[in-house]
Length: 139
Image (cartoon, rainbow, N blue to C red; front, side, top):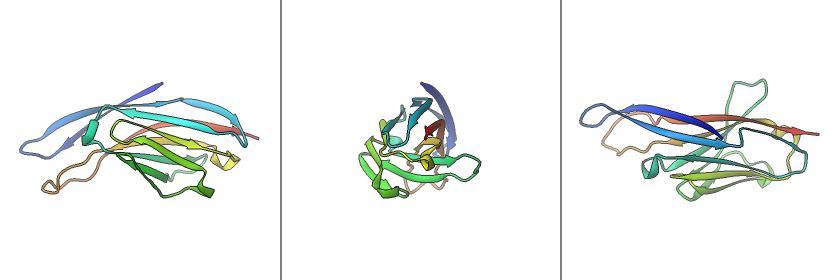
């Protein structure tokens, strides 16, 4: 299990910091084409961090592709080839990305991110916590 801690600044009556611990596992996996894998992510930010994002970075590329996110228990998909990606869990606690019928194109670095929610009266960007793990699919 890999751990990651994020500290962020946000505006309220005064500046203060909040640290959130994010864990993602497994940290590395080797599997076969056609198999199914489940990636796990959890954080201790609670309801203030209701969205859990899953990104994919393919080998040799710098861009991250958003697979989708959990808004509490509601799964929203951005990139879901052939419906093989499934998001489950609760974005404010722990979530899972399950990829079925693996292809070689699924071999990538996967990032889990927890998003902080702020009230509309505060103007600030939405920081994200990223945790990366590499998953390799063998032919």
